[in-house]
Length: 364
Ligand SMILES: NC(=O)c1ccc[n+]([C@@H]2O[C@H](COP(=O)([O-])OP(=O)(O)OC[C@H]3O[C@@H](n4cnc5c(N)ncnc54)[C@H](OP(=O)(O)O)[C@@H]3O)[C@@H](O)[C@H]2O)c1
Image (cartoon, rainbow, N blue to C red; front, side):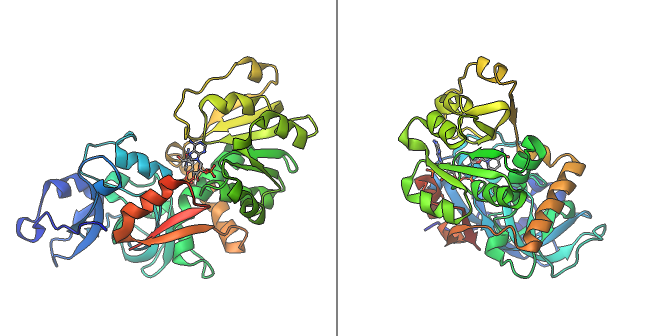
């Protein structure tokens, strides 16, 4: 259980260091003195370093909407933010949280495409999470970074759209761009990016080969749409991938693990194949022989959502793809577990346990 603190008497002062750092996008409302809860990291550390504080409810800038947050999707990168292992634009105190769903309760003067009352999900990277982290009751975010939630998708599922599906689209469609039928190896597939990757593979007719280190997750990955599943902890993954592909190798490797075992994956990449790295869950140095790429005329790329969404055309293309998928019902997030906001530390501990399949969600 976390401590609820109200460290700033903003009614009296009207401005504090924290508020000054909010900048234009989150001005405190000086009129009615309303406050809200927000998780703030004053010092990097373990799960207990996240403090539920009280801060002013922000006002939207002209291009922003304000959301009453309904559900908050947790992300592995937030463990790194919390522990001080993520490059941030400012030192603590910082807010935390990259994605959420919610209902619009105020809009800026320039916002034309959305109305008060609409239910939306936010795309990470379209706002500054150290100032407007989503672990809060309200956030102000640019309208251009929103996706409308269809009626059949509840708020909890909505909180699992932005990061997972945009990243999965970026990896498969924007970067690797395989052909229907191509075998795609998805490492750490039980993650909240892995499940959207399986659903895009199904939608596009790619052949998904999903890996997890945990044999207990294999059956559920199959149920969630994987064409084939592999226990990546069982050894000789190169041979098993080659066996699955009649010796030809996979066309695409999507890997958030990296580390010393990456070379084993490259050995199972087919001619003119594509490997895309999108994280480094294994912190040991990434090492591989460049000959493995050269001999296959293969390519190695990276993808980062926070860079991708800075290109307006990429943001629009990705949002449209996701909107179609959720509207049609082809994309349906898998929710591992929900926690109340005041159990945020337990939610981070659960993520660190790696027991989850899909998205962990906080409910404010
Ligand atoms: N580049 C981008 O734009 C981008 C965007 C979003 C997420 N990501 C990355 O994608 C990954 C998944 O994110 P998430 O938030 O969905 O995380 P998540 O739900 O916590 O899933 C991570 C999964 O990875 C596996 N794993 C953890 N540590 C590992 C290790 N050392 N070696 C191998 N597997 C390990 C675990 O599954 P098993 O034990 O079942 O294998 C774990 O359940 C993270 O690395 C995250 O940083 C990148």
